[in-house]
Length: 382
Image 1 (cartoon, rainbow, N blue to C red):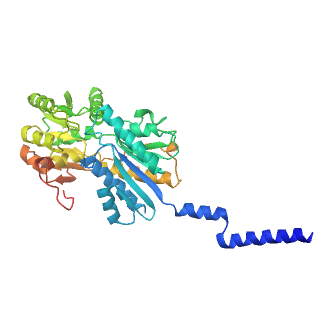
Image 2 (tube, helix red, strand yellow):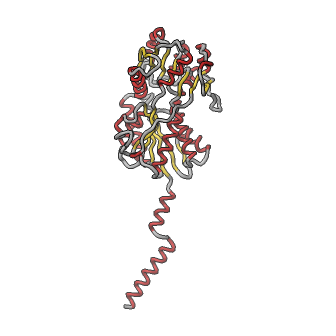
Image 3 (tube, rainbow, N blue to C red):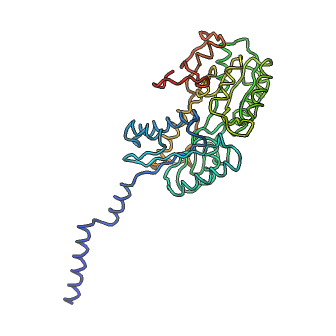
């Protein structure tokens, strides 16, 4: 009896010492988990020189800083420059698919595999999918895989790519922010400056983005919801064809709706230098044009009611952090389209076309044209 009691006493004493020196095992595990940094990954469909991606990236990083996932503005700038940063709270990385310039199916397949390898190695707890190809190819690969995913920049309807059961109840581990497109509003702004304008033509590259936007405008025109009538759609990835069709359409229309041109290729099938297409357009076309995003006004196009890339990245990031912190679920969070950005006008192009800009309200006046080799002011200027 005594030996049994002594054995029990020794076991009790040993357990007490373990508790004193190491603490409860469950508490220790929880502490280690609390000290672990969040892992956040951005998959961008495009490339770093693409102005739209620069804007969505700024919105993403600004939301992280505001919500305490970046420690300082210096870290924000470091992330935008190097695509990765480690703060006190999170390890954040960004990868590029570069599918705007490399848009053939085998190239997209190769880019998708590389991203999958990164995700499987990094094991992120939250993934942001920038624009259509990332949403489609990465989103569908990891649907219902455990970690939340949030898209931004999906054109038109958020129901494309079969990622959501419905807008009201997405039903899976993915939701996000989409581009409603302020096409009607941009044309209405043009009409304020050119009240005699009657019709227009669409100019777009033959990419997922270009096709989606063109189809949306065509649908609006078919329903009679636009202030100008649609005369023609130019949809091609061949730069020479793009130029010749625009010149042929110029005498027939009062204006152009310039959509994406980053998918254009030269006669050898190689992607054009970033500003070659807008440079040609600005030097050779003398009809007014509208676009749907500020980035194109920065290159030199006349005006836009901006479908803001910054807003897309910012709103999507705030949404995603709610999922990461367990406050909400993507399965029950409806996708949304942010409010339109500013009414933007390029003063250089207005002067070239002798546009009577006093006739309309302008929220932001751009005084440089990147397509003509003019640099954006260091302040980020207008």
